[in-house]
Length: 174
Image 1: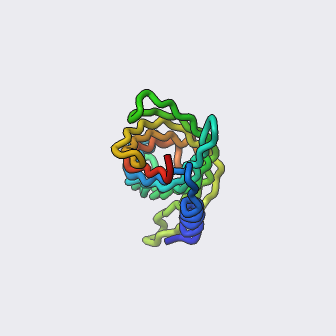
Image 2 (image 1 turned 120 degrees about the horizontal axis):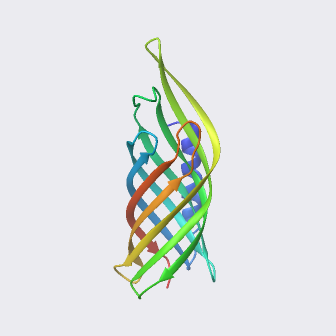
Image 3 (image 1 turned 90 degrees about the vertical axis):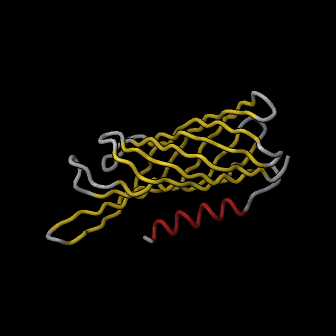
């Protein structure tokens, strides 16, 4: 595991471990798609949602997966990072809610390039924007099933990406 990935993951775990009574822990998995060439990768995320009176902040780590080379790109790209998203949620019933989130996404893009039968890796850091929508269905008073769509806005190396995730959100208090 690259050193920046260890750092990003350590930050996300530290944020998640500090959860208070009105916070939630979200663990999601899914698929990312690079828009330019429709290549896919397996994605996952862990985050802490800290609730305030009118909004929430979603702090976490997102691994967009390993996107294989395509005909347009000869590089294999792995993008992941930490985010802090402003999160608004609308409850429709006691069990069903939807939300919108947007905010900064500090990414590290590892680019593996083949040259002379050798793989050369480089890491580039970017401050990007991440935005998306989600739907939650409470299965118990503290546990929800979550589906989420996120869009990582364009960077030169990766291009924009759509990330589709689903998983569990656990609330530490009611």
